[in-house]
Image 1 (spheres, one colour):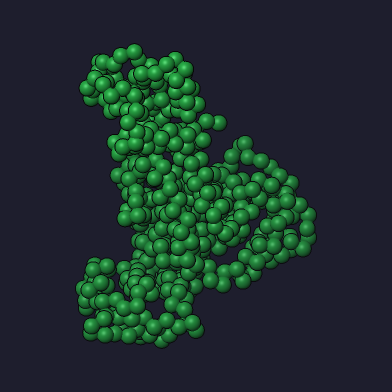
Image 2: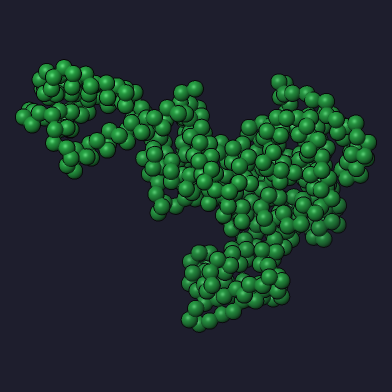
Length: 481
């Protein structure tokens, strides 16, 4: 979404966000981060102070620049104002709420010239060409993949900067009031969104306008058809018509509900959300995602630690993976693991308002990102699943050997394949030799001498065997139905 802003508008937003993030910011920091000259930064700061009287920026030759925060005029509101007042986002709002416009109508509504509108449309179409979303000009309307268009507007409205005062809007208030009845009529919809009413409210807003304006998603022939009790309520029908200037019908409700219940209703929510990493939502989501990924990385020995750039891991460049061989089984396993890890995080914290958002959207996307970011993941899981071949050479009576065998069967039957040997040669391929004989022959195979415990080397071998067993048990939880 930020890529739709003009270079100057984007730079203004970034300057304010950098100043918001620190007490003092040097001019060098600003120029390096924004990749522009000192003169450009000074000009931007001067324009910000001129255009927005509520913003006070102090300067110091030694320290740089400091943004004076005010409860009366939150800086977030100013950023909201900057973005909302850009021509591209004003145009998008109009195109969502109406089916089409003539150029002369847009000139009158936006108070700009025809050339300005054409330039914005050209820039929009260029930036979203690969997403198969465009603004057509005869007449002006937004066209393309309905799922991607829904995502575009969803993220536009979902972020904190964009949704200030939105819930007081009469349309959103009305939609919030009808949700309980929708849930009663459609329990599946309730299962999907009962923990995330805010997202459902926004999606209903978007899809009602898109459907009413003739932009339906291709119908799923197997989709459910429900008789909604909403259309029998005369008060609701009247109110709906007043707000949307369209009749509320059973077909309309079914089209919207079935669209929202598709698993891939919207495109890459994860990537879109992390392009707005200044928002309060990002901070809340990151507080859950980060420890969750650390846990997963530790259990599966993935190349991720506290120093790893989290954004790069979960937001890889998809241009590099055009021919990536997607593996559904790995995706499904990862999704189950992620849901398990997510729930384990939540069990240790307070109720998390984005739980449904995670389960129905974010974790699905994250499973795909993990598979793309770590193409050796299949090899890693295969390695964990591979049994360890263990040779056992014991100097003991029959009862002791039987006891040792029962111990291995009980604890490691799914992790190791073991062989009792009367004597040992190094011709056979084993991952480990377990023995209590100090006079075992020299071998290249790692040796666990249980007669000499404890010592550092043997402790390391036991630890390795234990962790392999733990990883195997961990994976079996998700790969066995």
